[in-house]
Amino acid sequence: MFGESQVFLSPQSAIESLFGASLTGIAYSLFAGQPLTILGSTGPVLVFEKILYKFCKDYELSYLSLRTSIGLWTSFLCILLVATDASSLVCYITRFTEEAFAALICIIFIYEALEKLFHLRKTYPFNMHNDLDRLTSYSCVCSEPLDPSNETLELWMTHNKSADSISWANLTVRECKTYNGVFLGSACSDKGPYFPDVLFWCVILFFTTFFLSSFLKQFKTKRYFPTKVRSTISDFAVFLTIVIMVVIDYLVGVPSPKLQVPEKFEPTRSDRGWLIDPLGPNPWWTLIVAAVPSLLCTILIFMDQQITAVIINRKEHKLKKGCGYHLDLLMVGIMLGICSIMGLPWFVAATVLSISHVNSLKVESECSAPGEQPKFLGIREQRVTGLMIFVLMGMSVFMTSVLKFIPMPVLYGVFLYMGASSLKGIQFFDRIKLFGMPAKHQPDLIYLRYVPLWKVHIFTVVQLTCLVLLWAIKASAAAVVFPMMVLALVFIRKLMDLCFTKRELSWLDDLMPESKKKKEDDKKKKAKEEAERMFQTVDSETVHLPYERSDVLEIPVKALKYSTDPSVVNISDEMAKTAQWKALSMNPENSKVTRSNLSSEKEECVKIEMEKASETKYVDAETSV
Image 1 (tube, rainbow, N blue to C red):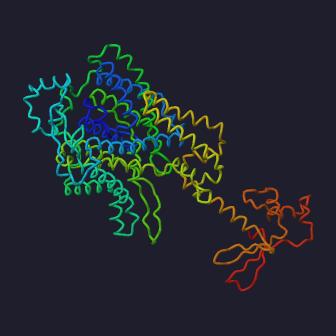
Image 2 (image 1 turned 180 degrees about the vertical axis):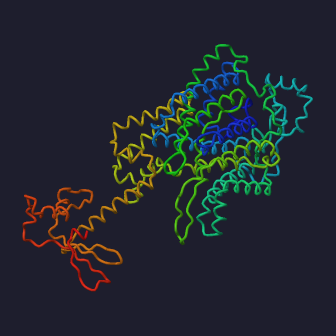
Image 3 (image 1 turned 60 degrees about the vertical axis):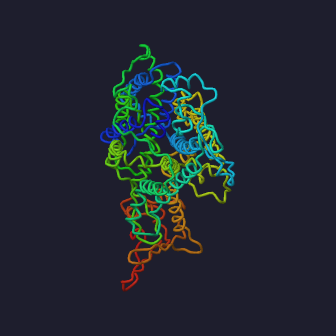
């Protein structure tokens, strides 16, 4: 719901967002196959709705009615995809597509947070050329416009006012803007008086929230307080940060912009209700033509939902319960139709919110020794947290007396933290760092062991190019084709099979977690080195193997021929060495006797030294082994 009020202007605002999120989230948390996924108004969906709103405004169509028609078509198509087993196509969504899309969502969060902060400069301007000696002479007054426009004159007539009847010098800033007055004086700009403290205080709140959230999240690795206290502080890092910053803002007293929340449970606009007519004042053919944009919306909903679900269901999260791609998409499709009829925003799996939710539910081992790093054990898989999130979101409508104290820069700082923290663990950004890193300073990444560095750079450049194209299309007039570009990522990844071998792609694009790959590779290397060490004899005729109770097993191997690779076994040679085969060969009933049994050469023996044995015993080598 980030910036949703600014996107929809007035047809949908805070009350519709809160009610829609609560309604959709509760149903999804109770009946979906993967309740760890958190629904929200994602960036790509908001881009689509913004384009639709502008289209309706340009062609004088009813936005809510046309949106309802498109939403019903999209709901039908999503249910049709479930019925035709289309969710099985998620097997083509690999790490390449996942990371490009997830990186885009994270960047949108970061960009929007910074953009909202910079936008405050227009709302709260400050004088960059102050003369401190002349502060006593600064003033700012509201005056009558010299050449009022026709719109201004109509506005005055609407309020039964005229230029002479308005007391311009006594108007407040808001009243002066209402009557389109002009600000004059050295202490104000064209848009209003200067606010020397508000903008800088907002900047302080913004960055303090970001750094404090990051610090408290990492507090569980600090040395202070017991483990339970540190874990609790880390789990509730964002909530504690908001509480601390609200208290500080209240004590300082600078009039920072606060969260605008509704006071009554009713639609934002008085000319609309809770049920929207799909046709409304629009022509009848809009019901049929709505199927065309609904195809793009369906592609966007499908990709947004399933990519997020694939990220949540990664093997590295060690989830024990199965995936529910079909059931998840079915719930999203049903609730999308309900929200369309009620004029509520559309909600789909939110990548950043879902990743943050999963990270907060991680289970780690307790450290038993000083300096020991906790080990990741898995995720707490349950429906309670997701359900409570959306229940509390719905109850927030009745908590306006508390929520109105939250400064908006604090929320912007939380969004910046969520976007930045979600970038961790994305292999794509690790590979970007390799461009400016000398080889001797590069980390021991598993794909660098098996893939040439120049090919790693080519793979990263292709992925980075796709990300730039996604951002350029989203921000341009061609944003209507944004869903097709998201779908094109799958085909671009398929074309990369022509440039890379399957072995290289298995290391660069496999979904197996990086740490697990590295551990398995180190394990194989260690086993091979151990085998070579056991079989390799330098100036020695005997291999010493540890035996039970600290005994030693000595095997003379001077005349043995073997391979250093333990996986290579010659069945014929091994069978000829066994005692059973030799016993059969030496049986007089057999007409054939092997050459090795006729030889007078002394057999190889194994010497076993036992601590409790009173004398040395010699046993046949094969029988002993």
